[in-house]
Length: 509
Image (tube, rainbow, N blue to C red; front, side, top):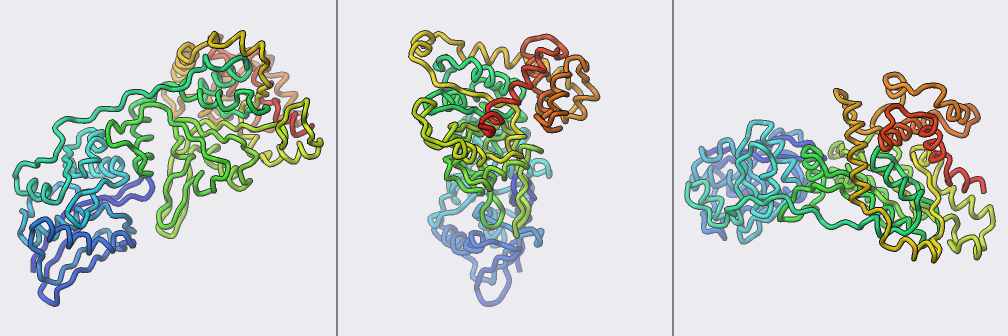
């Protein structure tokens, strides 16, 4: 009997567990079995591993082979265990030294000809391995740049099983890239200078970026709602190193990272079509749930154009991430938790016909029913409600290319965020939208003389208790942008005006 061990990583959401792979060669009828709760893709690795070893010029042992993945109670999914399984069989058969596998984690899918194909989730998997003390990793050559983002890891990329055998035998690996891939340069984003008019919409975009607030834009087609939403990511500050790794890990699990320069340093932007399902928005799928648009927009923007056209269940499924900044999806194979702290931007026409006031044929009831597709609990979680009127020819010609560019607005946003970060130093919060309303009132109180109008709106039922807290958060953001320290009545009243915007007016029409 011969026994060898190697290691890989199993992922449930972004959380990983180091998996010990044991290969046992025993006397008996030749065959191969994989145990340890494998899914279909992993169970099929028996054929891939055998064909890859044989087609790589190595000998397949004519023994009864058992491949065990521990912990046995952890569901294993995907083809990323192929490389570890093949290495275990080779080491047990004496083709490679068993000591060469010690302290290494192996990730990758095998082709029948021995090629090593890329797999999703390499970044969180290597992070898990390093935290567990496995600081050497062998990954597909196409995933090497992603693995090298993890501090303290010694990562090697292999393009074939032959290369892995050479590496374990101490021979040169010919297909390992010699240079470390750096983060890709920032992509050119749409500029706010292209937006003509819409001073209220531009201000709302700036406030949303500075405080991390959610935004609802209501206006006729062609008024610039989509243009404003698409320019919000450019106003947001670049991601910090910590946030960039977290965002990159989510996109890695989803299999959406480019091979070169995988580190995401810009705020992501997701704009799903209104026919998207609930699983596409919040995540789902059989087995372990994969991330949806809400998580892919983490630390960035989730834009839902034509928001009333989305299924009501899809929109209401966003309540949890809007409240606590994460998505928790329970499945039979395990519970996946993905971060989902994004700025939500909803855009809607004022009525189904969308012809504007002059040509609208919709009745007041039709308008009310149309906007009522956006539920009250969802809109209650949106901080800024803004009307985006139709642009006139005079406004378009007068401001064509003469408005404030993104760079100028982004500089003010960065300054406001720095002010907020200094105020919340020593806490877990960084932006005004992160702070619970009760902590904001107790630790950073605003004078009662400044909140009098907002308190009256609360007494009269114009805003809920949650809405009152959001008014205070937006007031702090306005104060940070204007550099006035503690908000005054001017900032609180402006924040209340944002709160009592077109949503309530449209629903009452």
